Image (tube, rainbow, N blue to C red; front, top):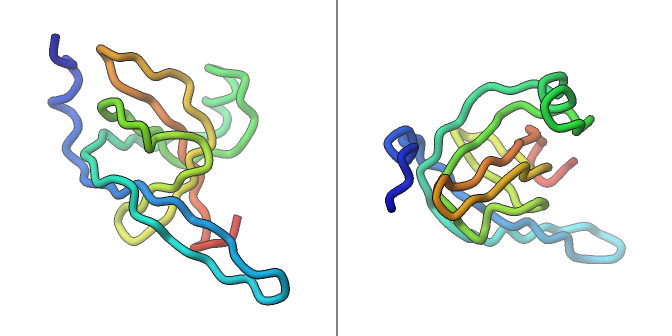
Length: 109
């Protein structure tokens, strides 16, 4: 059975992993994990707390087909901005995955 919501996944995003290196001088390595299409929607921390009891400030909510790279700690690059995946309320084989995204400065949380 196909995901009925897949038709809304029109926005290209890149899922990346950012690793911090170095003891004295911090350097960062960004590794591309996946390029996917998603449905990105504006979202607020107030809604996250109301719907999920999650108290961290969020900027976007992302819906996408299941992908193993959509997990807490990885980041989403979209439209020149970087967002950390801070919460994955659900992932369902038929309906895809939902993730809450917090906007961050590149390599700074």
